[in-house]
Length: 240
Image 1 (tube, rainbow, N blue to C red):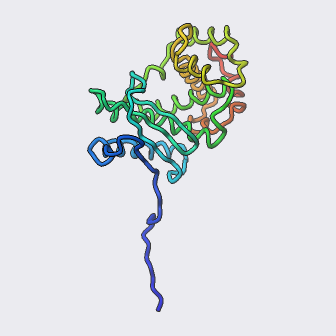
Image 2: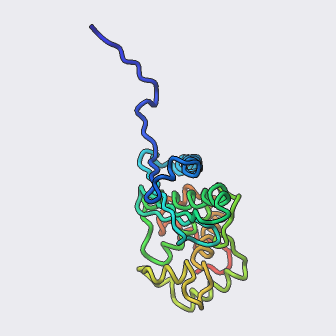
Image 3: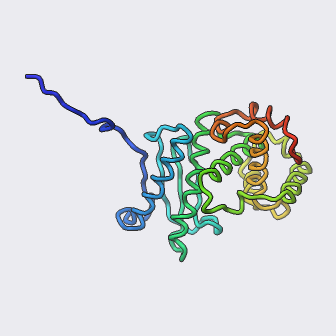
């Protein structure tokens, strides 16, 4: 006897994994359900835009007060498949953190996932400027509800940052250390303007986009060498 087994399309499809590292009991409550919903909706949109494989992506949700106070959430791309999200669930504005600020972090970190898969995060100061600038440009394209202070800049700020980079010979830095990243991207050194790396990275990425007419999605998977070819042709000020 022949038995025909009809399987509906997509029956065996697997989806991204979302797991809670601490406070695992939250997952089953209303907060957990809201978090899973926000992550899923925005991650799917980013994954589609970046042509990633949803089956490979994992989100680890942590709860801690060690987050950016401006947003209430931190993100970290641990490897090409794992995004770690940390949320301060003690905040009075937790609802805003989840619904308005968390999506920005999801788009940012999934941009990193796509770039790491294609060309790597990068080693040099210029590599990391481009990687972070691309992530900021991608997040701004897909989520404008919340725009963190490290993603916007003025021409005056860019001039100051440009001069600081020039004075410190940072474009000669071939291997960025944790200390250099902290100083230039997180503002842990008082004489370097806070979030300089993020702001200047976004600035040069937007200068390349204007000159090349390439999409941020296409640029995300291009090497530093290929992006610099366009950078050298831009007429934007404060470009090395």
